[in-house]
Length: 99
Image 1 (cartoon, helix red, strand yellow):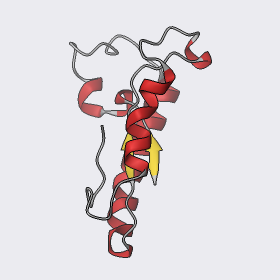
Image 2 (spheres, rainbow, N blue to C red; image 1 turned 120 degrees about the vertical axis):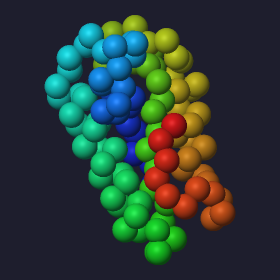
Image 3 (cartoon, helix red, strand yellow; image 1 turned 90 degrees about the vertical axis):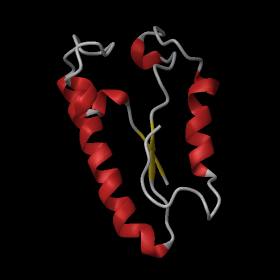
Image 4 (tube, helix red, strand yellow; image 1 turned 45 degrees about the horizontal axis):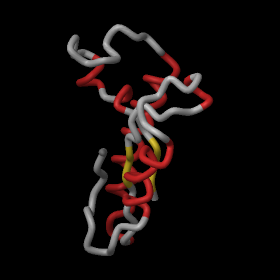
């Protein structure tokens, strides 16, 4: 299972004045992605013994309708990590990881 997250959900990056999103306050997006990251970690721990992998992927700033096509990555490139995580082999990362 793969949750599509974002670096704006990182509490560490939210406090980093050198991060590209530092000056942007988007309460809905930042808080929902931070919550998604926390849920991903907790479910990954819970489901590990059942052999279910749960990861979160950050596709980067994709060029989509939702950002008025101001993204820096074409959608196929942004989707690469999501697809890679969705087809992990049984011996892939056993716990949540973000990319």
